[in-house]
Image (cartoon, rainbow, N blue to C red; front, side, top):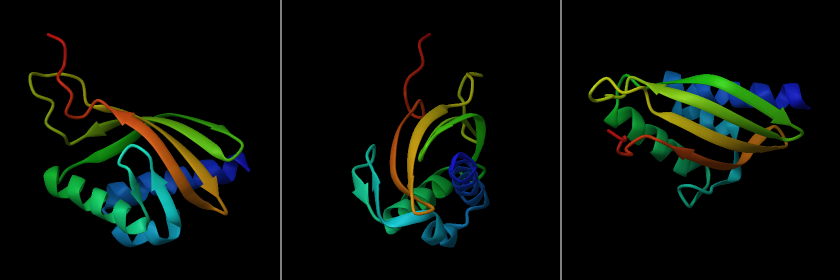
Length: 119
């Protein structure tokens, strides 16, 4: 199961990086829940992805670490193509996915995007 969960997570990041909104239909469960955004459903994913690509046309997510345990994956990523301002490191995200029946059913996460950096 861990290889399958890892593959689903990888496909999700590949789809995001390609701006492939239609791939979300196959990647996310119909009743998908994004806990950080407080949204439900695949359409909420498409809106979030579209918004990110509109705001940052060159955005790309790079997987740095992925740990899989059963039907969950914890993924640490960096965001490239996002203005870093003053040479700061690229923003980072930590996301945890719950995969059910081959699709991402839930997501928990946090990001440093948009947070002020200590000077």
